[in-house]
Every structure is written in C-alpha cells, then in structure tokens.
Length: 604
Image 1: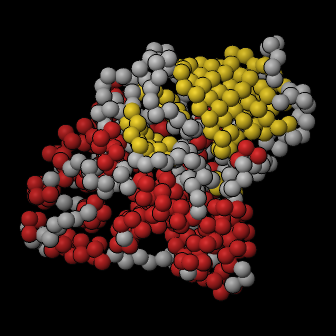
Image 2 (image 1 turned 135 degrees about the vertical axis):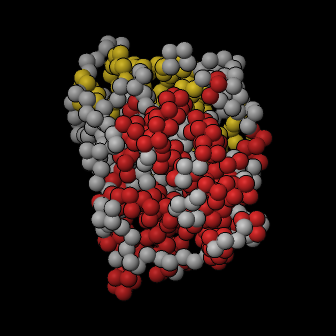
Image 3 (image 1 turned 120 degrees about the horizontal axis):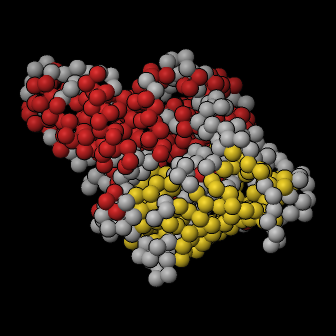
C-alpha cells in the first residue's frame, strides 16, 4: 500500500449536509493538537493547528464547532492574532467558524477551550469507575460530536492525519486513536501520531488509571487494574480474529489493534477508533460469549475506517459491510451454527426496528434522508442488518468466492477513501455484476437501497439449534415444567432466542418459575439480563425491579437503556418508576444516551 501521508483525499467536493465546511475551497489535511486535561474544571484547553490545502485560492476556511470557546486565531507562524467569525448556531450542527485567510496561507492555529456543552466528552468521578480511586475521561466523536472538543472539518468525507500532545494529571495515562503509550510516565505528558488519514469522527481520547497487557505483537488490552485480568481473558481470541480478517479481505492497514475497556457509562457496545477500539465492560461475560462485538469493531478497520461512508446518509456502507464481515470472522472462529444464530437474532431486531418506524417509512431505506436531522437518528438496525442482508444476497447470487474477491478489491482499491451509495452501486455493477442482467435483476439493488422495509427476495436463514429452542419453549407453553426442559449447555444466542420466543404476556407465577429455574435475574451476561429485564417490565414482574434499577444506574449502553425506558413508559406505574430511576441514573450516562432518554420521557 502506498505511503498514506501522500494519499490524496477523495470526496473533496462532497456536499455533506452535516458540516459547514467547503472542502472544494479549502480542506484540512493535517491536525496538530495540544491539549491540557483539567478534571476539576471538566475542561480541555489548548491549541488546534489546522494544515490545509487552499484548492480554490479562497479568502476563508470554514471549520465546524459546537459549544467551543474560541479564544484566538493565528495564520501560519504569525504572532499577530487574526480575526475570525462564528456564524449563528444551527440545531445539531453548532456554529461555522469562519477564518479569513490569504491565498498563500497554509495553516491556521485556534486557541480554544471546551465548555459544559462538549457532548463528546464524559467526565467521570472516581466512584463511577471500576477502581473507584481516580477520575476518568473518554470521548465519543461519532457522528458529529468531534466539533464539540476540536475545531475541525467534521465530515466523514474529509480525511486528515494528526499529531497530538496531551497533558494529564499525575498518575493517569492518556490514549488516542493513534500510536499509543503502554506505560504511564511521571510527567503526565503524552505524544501521539496518526500517520494514516482519518475522518474527524474517529478522533478519540481516553484518560484514566489503566494498564496495558499485550496479547501478541500486534494486539493488546488496556483496562483499569482491577479489570485487566478479566479483560485479557475475554479478548484472548483477538489475535486469531485479526489473522482471519486479513485472510478474508487483505492486510490490516493500521499497524496495531488494541482494545480499551471503558467504564460502564460508555453509550455504545464499541467504537471503532483506529488502532484502539473503545469497548463497554458489558461484554465481559467471563466466557467469551459476547466477543462478536470485538469482531465487529475489528472489521471496521476495513469497512468504515479504511473505506468510509461519504456522508451519514450513506451510513449503511460502514455498518452493513461491517456486520457481514463480523459474521464471516465469527463463522471462521466458532462455526456456521454460531454465525447463523447471530444472523437470525439480528434479523429479529431489524424487524422490530422497522415495525417501530412503519413499513413504508423512509427511515427503513438503506440510503438515508437525514438532512436537517441529527445523524444519530440513522444509527439503528436498518443500516446494520438490512445492509448485511443485501450483502448476503449478493454472496448467494454470485457465489462466496466471487463475492469475497469483489469485497477484497473494494477495500484495497478504495483504501483511505470515502464512497457514497451511488458510487458503490456503480462499482458493484462494473466489478461484480459485469453485465449479468439475470443476477442484477434477481438482486434489484435499487429496491434495497431506495425502498422501504425488507424486500421479498431477502435471504432466508435456518438454524437447527434455534429450531430446537423453539420446541423447548413450546413444551413449556403446553404445561411442562421449566426444570424438565432440555436447556443444558445453551449458548448465549440460544438463551436469547428462548427469551424472545416466550409469549409476550406471562402470569407472575410463570415469570417466577422461569426465573427460579434459570436464574435470569442473576445472570452475569448483560445480553441475557437485558432481554429478561425487558420481559420483566412488560409483565410487571416486581421481583426483578431491584435488578432493573441497579442495571440502569450502572450501565449507560444505549442499546440496553433505551428499550427498557421505552417499555416502562407504556403504563402509568412504569412511567413513574422510569422517572424515579432516571433522576439518579442520568448523571451516569453519556450525552448520547441522555438525549435519547430525554426524548423518550419528556417528548412523549
């Protein structure tokens, strides 16, 4: 692969509805960042130097900001402060920072500090961490929150390299989506380099009391000292995953692949920040049963990080490809049965999501229409699971060998570039269809991309193990005792299927029998516990309420939190309980989760 430093930034003229930037005029190619982390003030303060190409000899460069305090701007190496202008605030997007420049200007330096409105940042007290001794900070820049902690051109269609210097309090370590330290230093000053160009949503920073444990020469785990042993055990298959991924779709382009386990308030299962995946501790089940999430984030090293959706309207190009790739890793590692069960669970969630939108909703299209809306609204199972269904249909239509070669070429030919839906369709026709009109008609890609719901030609997947689960659930419904069911050696997937197949409405004594027999309320597996708690809320199963309250106070993962609050507000009693829980749990949630629950509780 050619030197990433000289790789041209394509999609330079992409019209991104979620960015103020005008990349056709002046576009960033490198960021020099210097920050000091202040936990007492809950503030980042420092300087961002933007190196850019003035392609149109423009008299200004436009950056994205939101709730930043801009203290001064300088051009190139000038000591004189330059004028700047902040446009009026736009909902979701923030404010355009307009800096006058000269045709020969090569860089602008912005002195700034973050404010309480920096929604990318979560500042945690020692009590909110696993170790309970030191504070913790982490960022979540996707989708358009990078602009709340760095003034930058915050569009997935714009890529740049970066260097950073971060000063942290003594005794803490910092890591970024870059080359990282593996030990603390006494001065608390850490330097970072990201030589491969990335979009702004992949800018990431974490600061806290953590240690590093290598798994092999390319992979390793960061975690708080009290968590590191459990985390390294859980992720011990990571080196194998990386080898499998490379055997499928080509060399890993980011040098190292590490995982950092964050506190439980992290709003997502994982975030695919280059070189270092940010992961929720809710996947530490003790039996490696939830590590498909890590396979997913690893797969993003090709689909998303290497080849990126040009705008958030094209989000399925990141996530649909990644879910497909994740499944291929898990199939190679744990077998087709495992992958098929995961697939069916994903389709089940997709159907629930589309049912919530309505069969004809534009939000069930793969190509989204998010102009004027928060792109966070498009981050759901449609992009993930409908996107994966389309790729599986392509695989079945053209054959796995041919489809694998197509994907491998897609990743290599478009490496460190961005692509929109229309460009992908053109690439698909020229590189995979190649004039095969019967195959093209059988797939009907426009119906999948621009049409609602799940098309009729969607692949049908069977799982014999799930069919056996259905028989056991049916036996219980017909009156057999739960203790007589053949559930020995059930995997996480089978338990999830079991709970999902239970009748929606159950009597208190039925819930109690299931709980006493299978100990669902005491499960250490977050996925199983979440599925059971959702069932408990729907059926007003009071014995599970203390666990429900504890779970929602400790865990900020939006995938779990949002459905539980949605279920609670369906009754007057449930809404009252939801509001009481949220009073204490809200401070423990990242702004991404807070905004979702605020909408559920206060706009319904």
